[in-house]
Amino acid sequence: LTIMLAEAAAIHHSQAQEHWDEYSEEVREMLRQGALISGVDLVEAIRLRERFAFSARKVMEVDGLDALCHPTVPCEAVPLTALHGTLSGGGTAMDSYVRQSFVASVAGLPALSVPIGQGMQGLPIAIEMIGRSGREEQLFALARYLQGVGLVSEPAFPKV
Image (cartoon, rainbow, N blue to C red; front, top):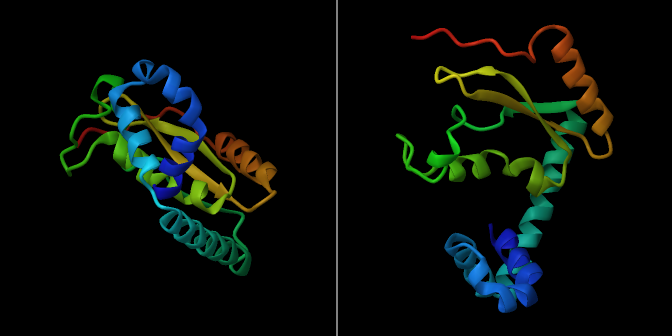
């Protein structure tokens, strides 16, 4: 989050000054927070990211994994109108979406999300596959395989 906020503040710095009123209040707050991040905190976050990325790549290499798979998000998709509403477990859907998908982003590894069906509300669910550096073609091959065996489709979950 430290890196993301600092980068967003840096990228939007000159444009934000001229077009501040055109940004949503949520984005303006993120840019304010990013502008307050110290150089020390940013460098520490970058170092932590590098250690994390090295560990993730090492695990995949040592264990001979082509991909790590996990739910793209920890809950069924929510309608856009509910994206910032509070979930039953606390936090917002947007928070959980970002938290769930940070691994590939922070580690700098390729990732591919594929739909695997619909949840109980009829909204999509998906899995994210995180691949090894430079091996994006393996992720696409895995997605095609899952589609071929019927795992990437639109089955509905039974109501419980």
